Image 1 (cartoon, rainbow, N blue to C red):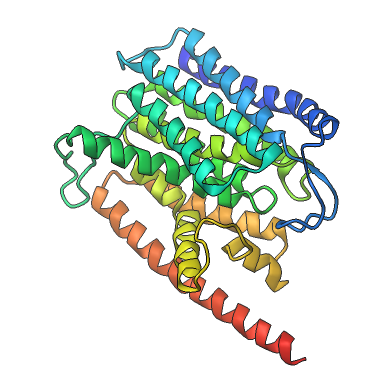
Image 2 (image 1 turned 60 degrees about the vertical axis):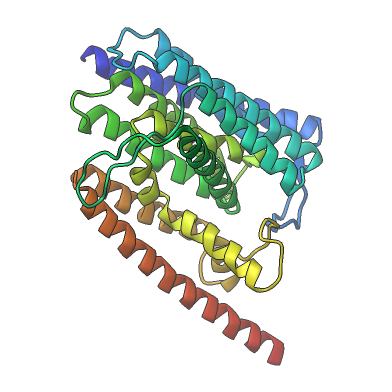
Length: 355
C-alpha cells in the first residue's frame, strides 16, 4: 500500500469508527438532558428521538481532520493550515449554535446571524471564492473585488447550511447526500487534479467517513437525528468545495435537487403570503411522504441516485460547458417533477376534502 493510500484509509476509517463510537454517547446525552424531538412534530416521528446525533458526526470529522494534519503527505497549498484552522473554528461555532437551537429553538433572524458569523470566520481564514471557471471557455475569471468575494462567499456558505438543514426532514437524507457529495469532492481532489491535491483531499474524506458512520444510525428507521448540526454539515460541504479549488460546480450538480427544492419552496411561500424562512411540510421529501406512495427509505435512495448520477458526471468530464448543460437539464427535469408532485398534491387534497 502506498503512503497516500494508507493516509486515505486511516483518515476514512478513523472518522467512521469515531462516529460509530460516539453516537451512543450522543444518544445518552440527548435523553439525559431532554434534548429530543417530541412525537408528532413537523417530521411526524412516532416516538421521541435524540437530537444530538450530529455532535458525534461533528466530533468524528474534527478527529479525522486533525489526524490528516499529522500524516506525512504532500502539501501543495502554502495557506492550507490557515484554511484548515478556519474550517475547524467555523465548524465548531456553527455546531455550538446548532446545540443552542436544539435546546431553545432560535428564530430565523438569530439563525441567520449565527450562519453569517460562521461564514465570516471562514472568510477571515482565507476560505473564500475568488473566481469561477467560465462555462463557455473553461478559463478562469479574473479575481473579483473584495466586496464581491465576501458577498458571494457569504451567500454560498449560508445557502449550503440551509440546503442541508432542509434535507434533514427524512431519515437518512442529509447524511446520505453528504456521503456522496464529500466522496465526489475527495475523488476530484485525489484523482482528477494534476497533480493530485492529496492533503486537501483528506478533508472531504474525513467528512465522508464521519457522515457514513452517522448514516448507519440515521437511515430509516432512524435511531438518532442530526438536529441543529445539519448547519455544521452544510457549512463543511460548502467550505470544503472552496478549499478544494472552488469546486462549486461539483457541489451544484450533486446538490442540485435539494438546492432547487429550497428555492422552489421559498418562492412558493412568498406567493402564498407566508414567511419564506418558516419551516413547513412543503418540501419535496415531505410531499412524497405525504402522498403515501413512497417510504422514507425509498425517498432517500431516490435522492442518493440522483445526486450520485450527476456527481459522477463531474468525474468523467472536464468540460465546463458540459457541466453547465447538465446542470441546466437537471434543473428543467426537477422543475417538471415539482410541477407534477405539486399537481398531484392538489388533486389529492381535493379528493380528500370531497370524500
